[in-house]
Length: 460
Image (tube, rainbow, N blue to C red; front, side, top):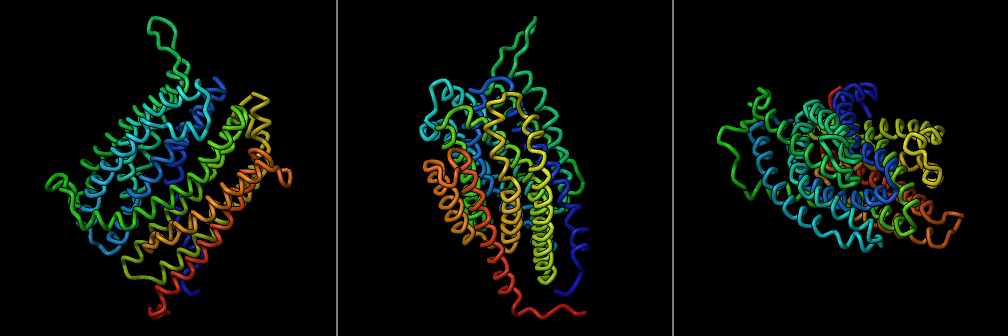
């Protein structure tokens, strides 16, 4: 492959990737804060958090994926210098987010299917319902902020998102601490446990959205997109259908990817509160590790979409392959480091010996799991930059639901190869990620060959 090498691509990708990594770490800090607080507060509340988060993520992530179609669409328009058209896509994404949030909030108010799958005890179920009630109010703000995030990432402004996400975390930590444990004295605040985590998230998300609206109105950078010349545009069928055509399969892929993981928590919760508490620690750690490949995937796909819009398909192909190499290499390194330090890492989360004993065996899968997770993330994001999103849905469903959840259920029940209980689910989930990453990388190679077969090679 001729042209600039891996180092040149890294210099282009990392300025877009690192703000996404920091910003998404701040977002994950919401869940990490809640996990650490509740691990030291009550095993019942931590179990309720695991089930509640699984329900919320299942609803939110699929809808977020639909809204995030604004990214590859605006990225290509921005690369082609069609700035007013890019601004119009933001307006239509706002209407899409509002419609989806109405549906999602209703789903969170009736979480009985999730409680039934988890076979939650009455005390846990009551806490889950109250927690999800608070998150139903947070969902519209979260989806509208996703529009802001997707638009800024597409126009190479990830720092604008990162700043607000860091500010949100700075507010979330003390507010969750206050509401989880309560406050004695003249200003008495009752200890709310897991419900306090949900209330804190709702308050912070609406404040974060308000700040995003202010930035879009006041920052001169956005004037070129004509965002406010005539107020918010009315819903328009053509751009909405373009977003739905790409966004629906994107949302399905992301939902399958996440439910393949979150349903593990629901099934593991049937084993008992200690087992699901240990899983929650391992899951939170894997989510932390995932932020690096997620940032690289965002940065790579943004550049790929912009180069496609500019008509430089050879550079787009080169950036896609280099993003995969960088993401896979860093994932292997980071996974091995965390595996070697797993005792110290689990000690950070909890001092409860029973919960630590449940979490430690799960971290043995961290290196392979993280490599597969990194490769599938970069490959799927680059495919979306090429507007390829439908076939990955099939790959995700067969691999993550079939191999991951189906295989995990069989291993957990049978104890084959000594992988019973939660360890069976983690082993199968790791295998499914390696399958899906291999399939997506192969698909990406085929797509790029098809796109470039009639394009003359670049001049030397």
